Amino acid sequence: MKITAIEDSVSLELKLLELMKEKGDWIDAEEMAKTLGISTKRTTSLINSLLHEIRSFDSDNLNLKILKGRGNLLEIKDARDYRKFRQKLIENIIIYKILFSIALNKDANLERLAMENFVSESLIKKRIASANQMMAKLGVKVVTRKKQYLFQGDEQQVRGMLNILFWRLYRGDEWPFSGVNKEKIIHLISQISHEIDLQMNQFTAYQIAYMFAINFSRYQRGFSVNLEEGWEKYRSICEWIDEKTDIYALFYKNYGFPKHEVDFLLIEAMTKSKIYNSLEHKTPDFWSILEGTPAFEATERLVQKMEMHTGKLSEEKRRLFLRYIYPCHLHADLFSNIIFSESGHHAINISSYFFPVMRQSLKKLLAELYQESGLTLFLNEEYLIGEYILALSFFMPVQFQEKEITLFIDTDLSEMLEKLLIRQIFNQFGHLYNLKIITSLSEPEQNVDIVISTSAMGEHSNLKKPAQLFLVHPFLTRREIGDIEDYLHILITKKDEVYSSFFVASHLPFFTPISFLIVLS
Image 1 (cartoon, helix red, strand yellow):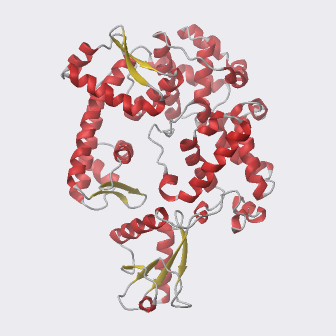
Image 2 (cartoon, one colour):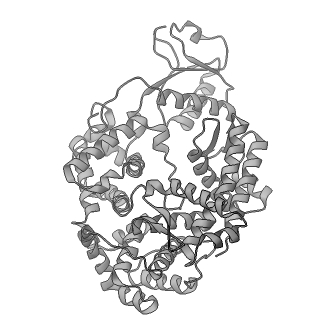
């Protein structure tokens, strides 16, 4: 394994931090890529990784904003926290190297790890303790057995965690698994996908190859998955694929990989939406194969809850929703507390930042679904809430569940320029916040949260209740957009009002059966 890839990635992340710090304003990925002499794709991947790291660092004094069309902005309110964060990145190099060494080497002991990393044995122990804190939520930790370091925990969780770590670092750019021939496994995956006419790009093929390499490496070292009794219901999917591809025989002939391990690999691959959607789209009888699986039951129950307040969905619209949610429920059934996206990065959980009311409603819904069904996958709330909101956003404007924020646009602009300003405000904020925009005051006592004006003098001076004033240019600057966004976020996170549950709020226009179907149309 090229352990230097870890150091290279962190080194580039540190350089990106310095670039954004020196800029002190918005900067796009193309400009940073050119400065560092790397591809824009690699730069974007590193920035997403930094975003996850900064959010995990959890400091109000350090923030990274990423907005399409604007670029990236690093906000530093306290230089001390910035320095602490840089140090954390550097320390993580050793943590990653330790975890990768334990994953791939049979003789990962204290002495070897210290020698490989040119550090003391006491530092290795400290970094392992830090790694165990990081992995605690996953139910995984590093332990010592006969002086060898091993991963302890549910084998499914161990493999899920390793898949995250390896894919986040390499993303298919390198092949770190010396025990598995890359060309051979990629060829085998292509052969199988061809047998069932499965559309698969190179990126997806590499994802599955990484899954197999990790699973195979673990199996070779004596760690096998123990699919619980409930997983018998998923085996019908695996056996259906085997009937068409002879996949069990292929993997046993080439790798000595047993049937239950192939089953786990197939189920894991099915959590990838592109794989699932391709199977469901191309195979008329595939839907009937899923019936009876826990993920299918969970999806049916969720849709039934929706239909209680939206009316019966057409078969086409119902399938569209199920097509997205089923692999999410399968992921929630296979893994616990793993909320990383398919790209290998921590799911950019916009819902936790912008939809607090919806999150709370869905949290209650998941509790109800678990109580009614006993399906443990509903306990994976942090992962599922984000996926539910993302799915619902395709069918309805989810921001209207949130606190309504009234913006008073008070300008001395022409009618045309004022309309352009309002359009810019809606384009920037309307998809994340429930905005009500007014351009005149019907009464001075009207509740206004924000005043956006091009002049210090205006009708807003007649307001009897205080409101936050933003003096802006006719065309909003990046800094003005950032200031307004910061205040909008404060308003939705420091609310005093109590809102109805998501599935009870039928008084909202888009929750009526007719308007819901219009949105879907």
